Image (cartoon, rainbow, N blue to C red; front, side):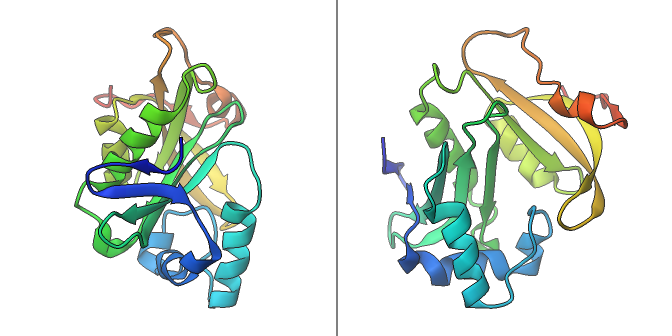
Length: 191
């Protein structure tokens, strides 16, 4: 399955050689604003993050999103193998607005075996509607919004949860966060 290529991108496993690009993505405070971890302050901190999150063996897929023209990472994308099948991604700021993440996510989703990933979930902070627009372009359907005291940043965040049923089960709902967090609602106009 790997690498996955598109007209403009290569999705491949990270290597330690990707550290400069990885650090640039993670250390940008505007990019990090919506990420579930603190920005690394040094390349050494970024290397630890890269090793723990992207180089260590793990279930699912955690991939570098690279431009085909350079094979340099401009972002990352992943799908967890746990019951959430959570799709997550991030991208360098100068790569925003070019459709790269939608292209990368569509290619990864197409490569995932439906038997192992019958559905995918994804969440975005309501203050980050561009991430939600990616989910919508992928055909994901809005389910609900919930309030979480987000860790490790320890800030309250309203998340919108999206679901993509890949196996034809249009009745499926993913209610884990609805059940876990007492504040939740279905916003009108997002279906």
